[in-house]
Length: 535
Image 1 (cartoon, helix red, strand yellow):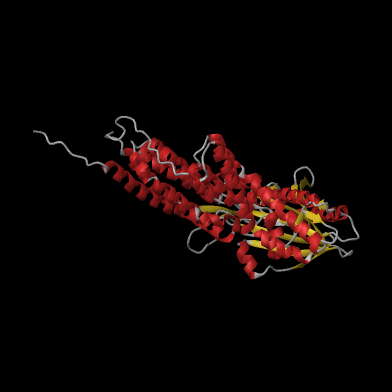
Image 2: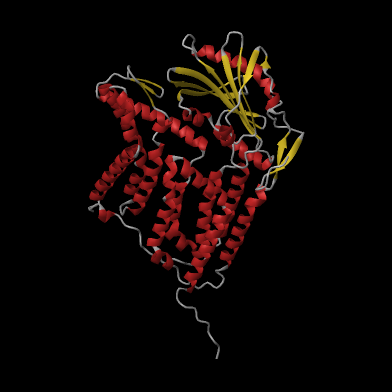
């Protein structure tokens, strides 16, 4: 009599969850570089400090649905391996270009691939939202962060002026400066509202997921967090202006700090709660009755759990994860092309009629910037009007170190960007122009990026060329060129513009030997890895 093998109930689900655990462990190892960058951003940027909570919330959401997840384990799907291949490709591109957000998003895609390979589409439907929620833990790239902050500063300034005028207080807005006559309120980077926007977006997504309501109500809860944050930030700035007008400038700092922290965030959460309560009443529910973790079980098709060849996608997914673990070290040790160039120690002290006086950055600043070479010098003519030249060169941006955007550094030094535009010098030399102010002092700033023979003003375009050149040319060298001159009270902005353009005319030929072009025949290679770098 033939003996029939017996499979105990839950065995398939147990195997699936063992696979999920092993695969998630491999994914964490394979994407460790990108994940460590996440933790670094959470720890150093206040607007992303909520990132520490996002994985815990995701784990809680999955744990509360554990019974439904176990019952949703179906036949493994080959789509999991396809997603894993996509994640690997994004990870490789992220490693080559040092655009960490690609690898961080690839990690989430890899998790979705693991779920598909473990339990098919039925398990994916049950886990999709909690895993997607991890996106709110990923910080924006620095250059996007800076541009978004600048735009929010402008909007917040306009809203602040609107609230001030409601109290019949005369006020004038000049860029990001709110002029109250006796006091000028500067809406700096910390006042943009980003520190409230990102946490509130994550909270509103979670509320929309748990909200038992029609889809239009849930969408309203999610997207309303953006106008709520901007409105409350503008209100905060307006209240500071009103306080200054009523009780004098000394009150400004105390009120600003009072409204700066959790007060604005808590007020924003309160408005979001009121909105949800009103929507719940429309559906005929009380506030707490309208919330709950979805506990529905996905109905499996007939025979979904008993497919004999269903384990193959699991093994394929594990192999791909193993390859991902090996990818990082291989790319880190990949020899990169480094063009030959002259070092800035020999940069001329005289450029045309301009005579320079070189300076040095503080050692801790050099370590923070992690640059390869730089020049910092003040050039002037006989009239005494000076132009500060700063060029930061990076031989490789593959390890994640790249020129710091002045849009981030200038506000970080206490300067306020009151005007910003993109213009050009000649037909093929775009650059960024900014007017910055601090304590009554005004300066004009020009800056652009030199990327392997290209002069680029747009930071998004700069990252695109970095990505493509790292893959096609095996090069990621680049530099930031920044010019600054003081706009004295006795001159107009156009006088400072003429001074910088005259200096640019003499400077550009001198830079050619120090910033490699697109075609650089004399090259060497360098291997970047955990050991010391050799050239």
